[in-house]
Length: 354
View 1: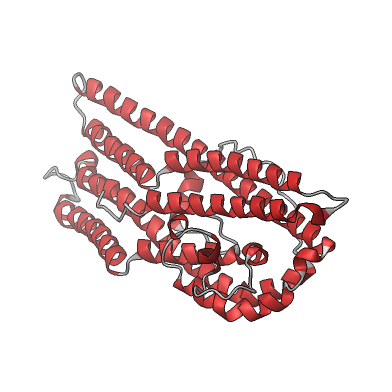
View 2: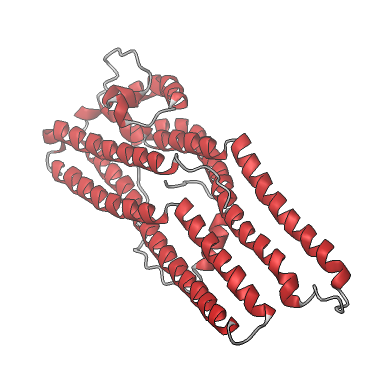
């Protein structure tokens, strides 16, 4: 899901950036900025504040939810470290000068870490970070594509449902919880009707609308390609790091048979905990399925772009109006289907304790 407003990065993004230090992430040149047809510009400006509000809310709760479960997993590994580090430092020995602080200081640190994990878990459920993120992201995505959808809607036909998506697509083809989108459609429909009156008999509008749609879909394809590349790199890096952690654990366990030192106990205790935490966070974020889905969607979007481009006869853009409408409607259906798949992918996860 592409965010279109600049926000501060979340903890989950900061952790992933650290994990990807030194990784080579190939990226294609960014696509050109879409230029909307003049008829659609007043309409786009009218819905921009609403879209920006929904998008900022989605980014906010998305950061909270994803940073929440990354924090839970990593703090759980830190709790293990707090439990075993006094032994490795030798603080448990009675003759150690800091022996009197060992129990109180490290136990207090461990309790604080566990309390932080519990607080994140409780707040995440009580304030429904995941649910608010999903609802806001759905509304932001549907609002973003309204200008592309508007020319396909027959405003001359009086239809009961205010939601334009409901007028074009079956209810099963679109994400639920779009009440805010329906209200926005009702509010801006008079402006859309005036702006688009006779639009499909205007050759300049038709060709401009097709080019603008292709540019938007190209942007989305570029975004999903970058998501796939990043998630693939993250999977490789975490799997590689886990291999080292569990390999060192095995070496530490074998060495412990010959050499008895508490530092080896630290290695054989904390390293597996850290590896399990990283693996759990990666599984919670569905990196593998997200990368595969984004890769497939980029291919499907390219096919939609080619179909739309094939419908436009630059010399006579009005000749294939119905085919143009059908091809763009098909691209929107693909985007809605992808959003449904994303919902089904994310919705089952909550904030399980690591």
